[in-house]
Length: 75
Image 1: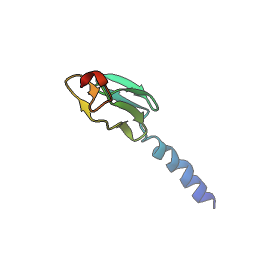
Image 2: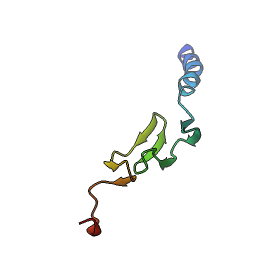
Image 3: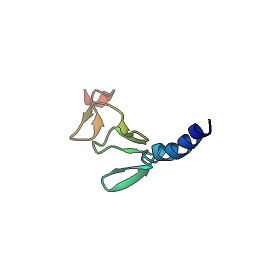
Image 4: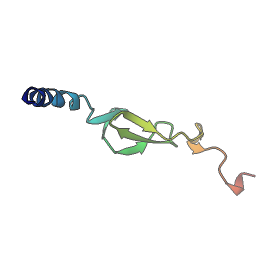
């Protein structure tokens, strides 16, 4: 049983060392768990251990607003 414990002790640190400690977007580093505005101006990006995830809203890229919103003045 000791060889198995030794093997786990040697391999486990190398497996966890592969996880990123941060994400980078537009030259800015974010820590895992940080959220920030995505480049499109209307979605939210989040730094995760698997990389950057983002919300998937339809955006009006000209204004950075969400399309199809309830704006009574737009009628």
